[in-house]
Image (cartoon, rainbow, N blue to C red; front, side, top):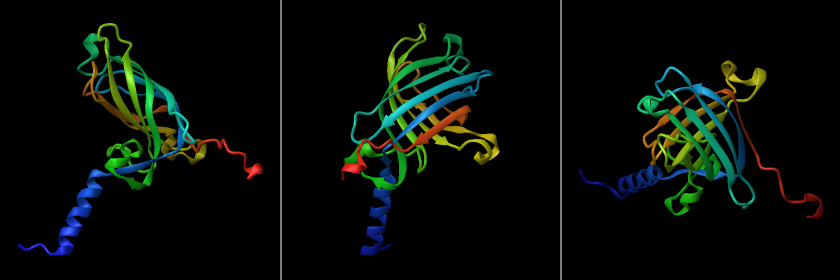
Length: 190
């Protein structure tokens, strides 16, 4: 089979798009609550506060506890406090590998708020530190929320450290709120 220049271009473009992620936009996320444990019989507790606004330093915290998570339940479960190292609302546009700090994880789609974090275990039986990512969706509030859901943790995934391979997600019985950044510019002096 001979590849025409058009087919070669289409293959290269689709490959580049597959490697690219959504672009991260400025915004804030706050919230938390409980969600189902990773295969356990209990509940996981999740809280987040993250902000990426107007070229200011990214800031925020993540707290997480899943005492009955399968593979960790005999050692006290997954439990950590984390500092946010990256954050942003995943937009419709694409970012390239050259703009990695502005690129959402491929597991986080448009409309989700992504938070990357460095964590320290709060479980004395499993000390250590690592990195992780969480993707969340604001499902609105009150009568506007579908099926009574106020927030969704699409994904929380731990890349390394004592809780490496932990991955969970689900509806939060609490709330996740994403917002645009408050403007730091004075429009009256323009």
